[in-house]
Length: 277
Image (cartoon, rainbow, N blue to C red; front, side, top):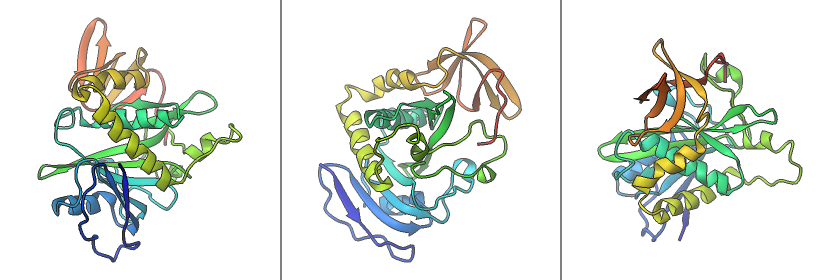
């Protein structure tokens, strides 16, 4: 079962009144608000957002990404925040890649050949076979409430001048991916999020022991698995062969026969300079 609750369209309106919770996830839809994450956290704190319920908006005026960077959020793309259960694998360091795994699987079921760029980005190859960032995930936890902010480029990707300097990958959007595929259909951001929530929730509840199986699925989506890569973190550069993910969600690199798991850093292909994007 799936329910969509249309709420007040503008920032000035208060959160909607609680409604009886159905047996499946609920999507609360807003118009222009400051932040999906802030609205979702406020609703969750009032017991209005159960695990797998989500908030979606048409646009954000104060959206944020990693390290609280401003997130360019005009209408046309998916801006959503979904509450995750505080159970394995979401109760520890594996939460980000596990969430990205669910999102990647849902997008693939809709026909988009995406990959997971560790730890929390979704990428898709362009016509030249170059991976470009399509979606990102930001996790926030407060007082036992865990939210995943999810942004998916549907109609446009951010212009280069608005992206952080030294970003490891250029961005793209679903609309751009259709240019070479005549006749393929793309849904609206609202319809796409509804489809993704249904598939993410279904994969979670129907996968036998998702807490133990998520890594196997994620490894199958992992960008550059089996390739030589480098991991940059605060001036440190580590190079190795990407073997997959560890049980705790870290990136496992084989460095001349020595296997080590890493939990932070920006991932690049060895020998490829970072480009803005």
